[in-house]
Image (cartoon, rainbow, N blue to C red; front, top):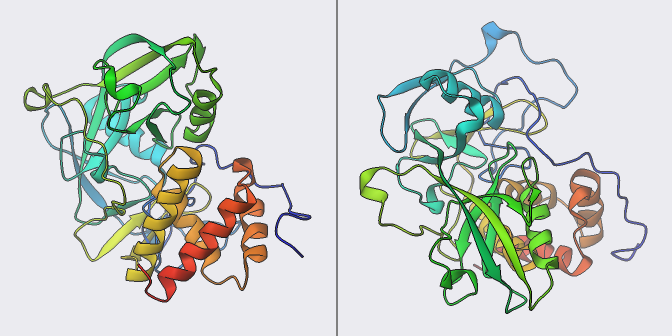
Length: 333
């Protein structure tokens, strides 16, 4: 069947990370998991989780990015639970945790915790800091923003394009959470929903952004942005394995992604930014996982509609994803 004809639209929502029990066998944050990759597959969805005694007991060290004693967390199986464990460790409301970076306390989007945590990674939690309200005149169709989200209801700025509309507004920085646009609350929205709203704002008019910036340590006060470099691949842990947090299904401990998977994830993540204004290595990893064994782009389109139909990916995007996966398979990097 030609691509785009008869594509099914019944995907379970890829909205927040759902409740799931930790499983055996592979690591990676997120079943549409951004930093996810290859490795052993987890148990089939729908099967009961293994007994608690058989689950791996993984302990991670964590600190608040602006400074704190070191805490230990364990027993989480998705991003929401991870934030909850961090909040418990530091006696904070869970809603205060904005996002986490791995092995650095700085707002470094190359080190953003996405779909995977290396078994030896140190987790730094960034919590809410100063709130601000900014008026923006949309002089161009493209604002120059790349949006991501934390998998638990907060969308924030991952990159600001140099020379763009937003780049000229010093109050707006990488890492800022977008709370509202023109008074419309965005709490609980996914990154693609926020990107779509920003794109649909009329050119030639002013709109208001309500933002919350991450609380900064003394040595971060002067830094305005730490946006990821274009083409920067998923940043995985230094350990031999990673913990993959799945939004649908149990968390799993897996080997690091293969060279093919890492490159394919990077290329698909670049396509997400180009077409949709978002970066999400967990989502890119899921798309690579869905596409690596498909025989043609039509099969990939059906798989994406079945699993990720909420995104309503255009046909030309699916063709490009198919091509990116194919290029990575044969080493055309």
